[in-house]
Image 1 (spheres, rainbow, N blue to C red):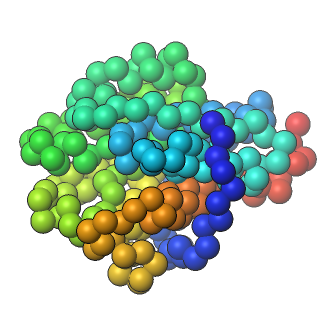
Image 2 (cartoon, rainbow, N blue to C red):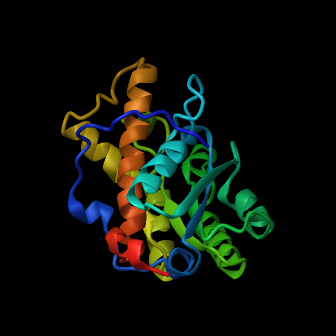
Length: 234
């Protein structure tokens, strides 16, 4: 997965949004023992920019992690699961992880469940099942919640799904990458104008660049390894 070199200028975020006390143990083992990091992003339409191939946050995440982890073989792949509820994704996640063998799964979910008004308790159960299936298949998990859009909030109610993702992440000791809070922060601080009725590809590319930058920081923080240490690992 190749990504163009598009800098993400600005897009600062409070440090607490990009940090976690939890440790991605399988990722750490893969980095130390094999000097590799295979990440599987299970995403949806918002994982890509339809008018610009390989410019979505997964491709940019790969490029950033390769820069930050010299000598480590970093590969990020994207598995699209468009218009699938968390339950539908969870039912096939074990086979997917077994086949791809990533050390880390980044599961982006919640939007379609909110659109479909799926029962929040059912959503919560599906999240737990998907996390457990991924872990049993050998991968660490990071949950990524819904994207923020002030226009979308007038059509769907994201709160029950955001709350349940936070609870499930705590129950299963997995990090939650709070995409919703980050995008809302950037909108409120003037980094982006997400109220725009016609945001265009330039805004989409900037948002994805900033998400990739934040996510790369979040992933590395969850290893609790100083990247400079990797140069001396054998």
